[in-house]
Amino acid sequence: MGRHILALPDLLINQIAAGEVVERPAAALKELLENALDAGATQIDVDVAGGGIKRLRVADNGSGIAREDLPLAVARHATSKIASVVDLEAIATLGFRGEALASMAAVSRLAIASRSCDKPHAWRLEVEGGNVGVVAPAALASGTIVTVEELYFNTPARRKFLRTEATEWAHCEEAFRRIALAYGSVAFTLTHNGRAVHRLQGGGRRARVEALLGDAFVQHAASVDAEAGEVRLTGFAVRPAYAADGPSTQHVFVNGRYVRDRMLAHALREAYRDVLHHERQPAYALWLVLDPRRVDVNVHPQKTEVRFRDAGAIHQFVRHAVERALAATASVQPAVSAAERLGLAAAQMPPPVPMGEFQATNGAPANGAPSMQRAMPLDAQEPAAFYRRLFGTTSDSTPDSRRSDALPTDEPHPLGFAIAQLHGVYVLAQNRAGLVLVDMHAAHERIVYERLKSVFAERVPVQPLLVPATFAAEALEVAAVTEHADALDALGFDVSPIGPATLAVRGIPAPLKDADAAALARAVLHDIREYGGSRALDARRDELLATMACHGAVRANRSLTIPEMNALLREMEATERAGQCNHGRPTWFQLSLGDLDRLFMRGR
Image 1 (cartoon, one colour):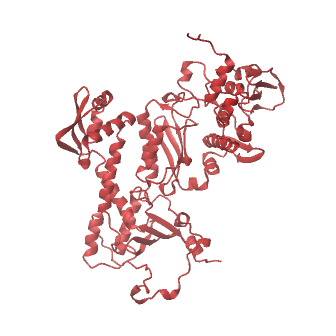
Image 2 (tube, helix red, strand yellow):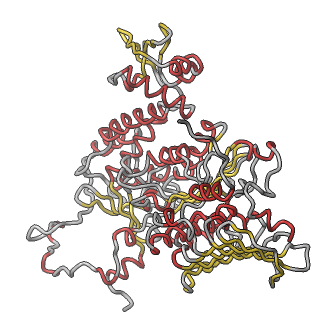
Image 3 (cartoon, one colour):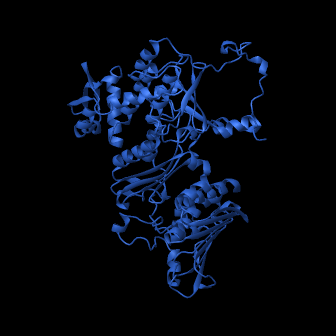
């Protein structure tokens, strides 16, 4: 026998909604903070007790709530932030769904005290487990105070899914940090169980990033500032040498809202792909601002996921903006500090080496001790021939000269001038700051790689196939071939439909002529549909070029003359991404005179 359909009571509806909107104390805190920001607050004070399970209290100096609106504030789907479908298509506020306070009130003891900015008195409303009290006078100078106590006290089945106090507190602090990071001009305080955790002044974005992510985050980051029409991306992208071991320092904000968007995450991974070691993770704090009509934030109850109306264009914009920021040449990027990366400090000095272990005879070490030998000149013909192979030109410099007279003397050279070669692997150079150490193979590998990429930058040559490769295709893949024919042609593909569900590959990019033609074409079509361009092709092409660069780079244990080493330094200064090899490892380090003084305890 069938059951009758019944309309659910409002209290039960709100309790169900609470499971989605305020699944844990951190979600409730996020909603309260967003309401405070939407009210124009410039000072927000947060007090948490018991990991947020016992109490959440958010006080702000915003515009406040009028007396007659307090009951509506805790009513379901009541909001001052949208009034029509037009507003819903261009959401410019953080909160807008009109269900957060109602959901909290249904599963907690909630109190709101507020004074509207244009009213002489403050008022207070209390709600316990969904039962709304009477509006009463309150003592409050300005703004709003919302207190949520004993979350899920009346729904024990839901409360038992909450974790320990420490775990819930960690989630609350993370929610606070994300909001505070997004709004650097707003002052915030946070206390937990009576202990002050954060006191943040409204000093701007850079100061806020330094306060929450650390001074080193900004010091080791490239500044990102790119604009295209009404879309702008600003913030900080940490340079690869200082990248993180995990994704905990990846922060993206869209119109002031912290988001976890797969498309943006993919674009940022691609921006780092060419410079980041595979064991490391990108680190960044980025703010994307665009017309609210171009992004849909109403796709998830917690509003952490968004949908872009032209995802492909946004993907390209974000990727290239961060790529450009990271693609600094060695002449403008800051040095990688060997002392910091390798942990060199006075307390970590190497053990002293007895002077008797070294002999001065012919510069050779005694007893098999390691040596730091001066780069010896090659014969009269070899340096010029090697230089031509290395950089496609000749050197007129004296082989044993410490600097080349042909080099410009009226502009700085951050990597300095070569003084020696160590074990045929490392170049030692002196600059104004101190000592520069260069992995010559890794550095030259990056130089060759960047040159190879420029060769294939404009149009990829096509390798025709003697026998076309055919494969069964989905309807969207067949449509993509027709819709993106020009893009496929530019990428080096000759693909065409030979039936309603079959595609034929008659040509593939010449550098990838040994690849599986059908699999490669399918991967490219997938990326064109997903992102508007071929990430898979780029990855395979760059992998091939990286392999070619590795084989074309100067090999380790090859003696270089001083002019050849100087030429390498000059090429590094002029090459983008020269700070990392093709595998993402650093190509050079800086030891300052201060670092060296500490090693030798000078001045102590």
